[in-house]
Image (tube, rainbow over all chains, first blue to last red; front, top):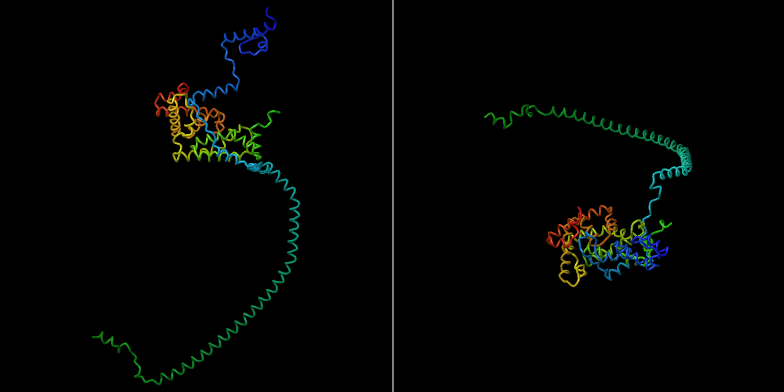
Length: 221
Length: 204
């Protein structure tokens, strides 16, 4: 006669189910095995075993090769080179720091600009006032000097003008005297030349010099 | 709360970025082989692949502080390496240095049992796939290379390419079909069918 546990197991059992009573009762284990054989159930494989079997069977269906392409081992010399990339104590290149938030976000940039304006506004306004006062002071100090310099320069200009006028008048007077002397000499020379013309006889002069030239006699022939 | 706790990847990256040599060694132990194999596929084997691997690791080390833990560290690190890989790939392609699969890869191929004919067939197929990839557009060749030849997961491939998983799936399907056509023209129908058994059954 079956116990209550055996009856309960056999009522609940389906092929593939793992119930604890099966390990405890050999008869029920035989019953379950017979049921599984009859149902032809393919029990699920453990994942690790499935991977190993897949590796044994080669590439997936549809792959271009029915056999796996062998993997080459890394040569020893290359392995040493690769290990030397990371020397002890030397960390990898630090990543480039990202720009600050106020550079990346326009909202933050506007807020930061307002904050800067509020913070530095009074300082800048005071500086502007001080600058204006300094300008006024400089104007008060410099303006008289500029005015004085202007008066002195005007006097110098007047003096220069008077000197220039004096020099110009002297030059004009000298030129007039020279012209007067030249005029007097020309007058004397013309008076003497009249006497010289009167002393020359009339036959020494030729009133028509072209008629006596050789060219005209040749043309007449 | 558990959700706010930093992931193991993030902790590892932070420790390595702080100059802890043990953390860097652990990180290399996890990823250097993937970097190296990626470099072999993009730059060809030899000194070029080693130089590319070193460049990738150097860039990873220099950028570790920028890792935020929102994606797996592997995908993030591989994404960092993408520009370097593409530059080397274009350079190598220009100089015809990646016209064939690396001899080191061929030598490491599993023998396929005791049958030497099967091993030779595998080598021939792998060469044909690489030569066909050489002729394909970069984005199509890249997705096949990562998913099928490097064995990356879809999530890792999507993170590396900076694309949604669905886009990667569709691009992968188109690339596989194109690759099948090219391999068929190289090996003949029987060879291509042996190489790409599932493609004909997949819907377009």
